[in-house]
Length: 444
Ligand code: DLL
Image (tube, rainbow, N blue to C red):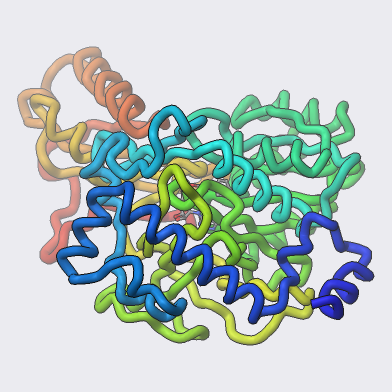
């Protein structure tokens, strides 16, 4: 242990908060097993759904004698969170819960997640370790442009940035011109936001005549949606920003489940808190490292709402071999796609089924619609084209506009972002011969 730590500590990028990233694998596995046994026992005692599932499979917490035994336990899915809405999976009493967040469910209701004081401390610690991995420390000025609110991005990055001792500018999302002004005037050294929003900031800064290369901005912590190597190249050529990929999801904790290191070859998972498995999404069978499949995560140290074998729907691979940075934490390949139909628009999770549920409630609307995604100036745009009856379509223009405004308002209330709605004549939307195609993604 001493050797790995001494070696790590001599690296100029090393931050003391990163010490747990370098714990030798055998010690890490032992810690994981201890934590797994404790959390499974806690969930069994406190969460009815989990207890019933184990009992109906003739299992009990004492069946977990090794990390491999985890594969005996049933999966948890987003549907379980929906069915127990809002507090049914809480494993602590409300008096011990200091925070809740929420994220999109597959229909109208969000899914709710909870944290005790200790859970918030764990979350802060993994965010501190994430930012430390990106080379940030005391003295950095971090502009946090993730949305504050029920979304975990804002407060997650905020606590991490404060925890590392940096100066945090809690900008939240939007108000692009002001973001650029602050970035320039306050001497911002790092930014946290979705990668597409940063592309938009680059475009807007250029329109405003602000040369981002002349600013002290040197690191970007980008996540909450898939992005690509070519986006990284674009960011790194237009600015002096080293772009780091950060991954997380509300159900597990929020941002800070995994982070890229300066080697930029996969994201290190904070395995001492989140145990990863890769499964075949069709059969549920656990796959060995190196094979692509769906990421399943188990929280090892979250008490308010433990998640045992949560099916993330995110497709990735656990990379075999060690990373030159010396971290013992396993890496996953960046997430490029999901095994379900969830779309991520400007960092907001959107299910086509949420949009459909709103449309089907409106009189005069036909069940034929298409969701069209495009990207303009780096920002995702989403439009819904939906057929209306011939009678509605022949109404006055003002009536049609009022109807589409009403639908836009309702979708915004349900989904959380404003989506352009265009009403079209019957028979305009292409009919499909097989499975209905509801989404055209032209974002490239
Ligand atoms: O997006 C948490 C987060 C905030 C992560 C800020 C990173 C930065 P949710 O809103 O619950 O939580 O959405 C989680 O977003 O299952 C992935 O499909 C996707 N996602 C998150 N990070 C990445 C990433 C936050 N780096 C869902 N690359 C996840 C690709 C990502 N997809």
